[in-house]
Length: 168
Image 1 (cartoon, rainbow, N blue to C red):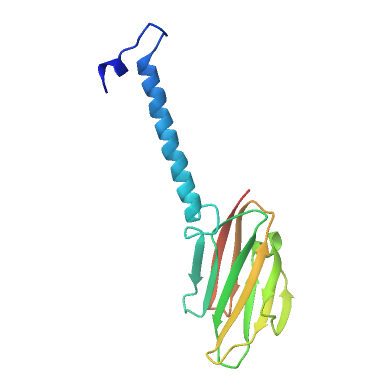
Image 2 (image 1 turned 45 degrees about the vertical axis):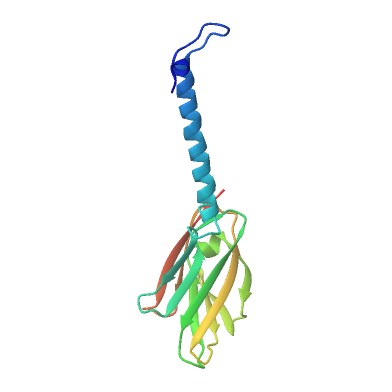
């Protein structure tokens, strides 16, 4: 920095250069913070991106759930459930938790062979393919703000728990 930029002048305008330099530093920090927020938003911090995409697998590997870890209230979110079963035999999947109370199911594909409620849980009977894999795709919408938790079970040993944080 040159001498002129460090010394306060009194003519033609009263200056306070040390104060001006603090303001410039604050401005620079503000620009860096704004750039960081934009980059984090593009990466999925506020939904739909690598930071938001999540997957959980049961200990025995039979159940896998892909979901959005971070989302916004009022948007639709995907829940993709894959269950390994016996080829040609139906498999039962139970979805439960506050997720069902605070979110509405808008889409359910493919249509389950049978679906029933069990208290606060939903039981779906899904058909399996030649490899013994059953898949279920749901889209959920919630006006809730905060953490939504859910679990998917395909037997006592095959359970996964997941949670989504919903921004306002």
